[in-house]
Length: 289
Image 1 (tube, one colour):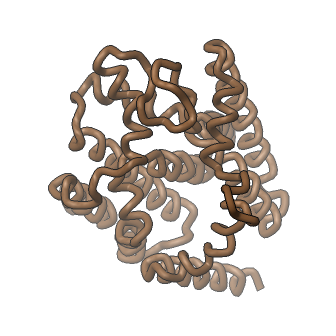
Image 2 (tube, rainbow, N blue to C red):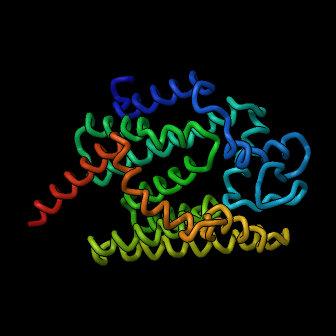
């Protein structure tokens, strides 16, 4: 029985166990963890779905942050398992492990990577990058973003077309409630996919667009019913940091864009992963010739 368990699943289980055992080692509890876990903690203790830590709102207001789904799911998680740093961080480990598992399944189904050892190496690389370690070991919504994107990739690999399209619409409908940043991500990635593969996945990309429209409608209903739509837009704008900070002539997003290449290539695991992806792409192109 154990011999039938794929190697990449053992890798995920090992990293998940290691993270659980060392949950309070790194990082120290910091501002973002308080911001995104606080609404669910207040709800758990009977103070309503509001936050004392969210910088764009006052305490007592219905929480209208830029990522509604993450703290909402945390409410159910806290109800089932209680509140504490262990519960908060283990939830993130589960999300990240699930995302890595979906990615491994997807690359096998799509035959991007065929050898089991290479799939296991991919799983390990996705756990050890400097930036991702800090993200998934913190109580932030980054793991939820990656899980949603990985689930969409996995949905693209379902063989039956009708089931595949329904799964893509369903998953994509969670993109914007998970984080608005997944909207631009889907547009850019879909454009790249269309550029390289033409109309092969045109219908599936249309399903992603339909899912995004459904997600936007759900967001509007959710915040509109509570009279917090404009507050949500204000929070999203505040978190995106698209304004000019005091004393600065360059907006934050532009400075981050300039710094992006340096940050990416600072992480050895990311460099290895990018080289592997480049090698796969070159191999596929050589086969097309």
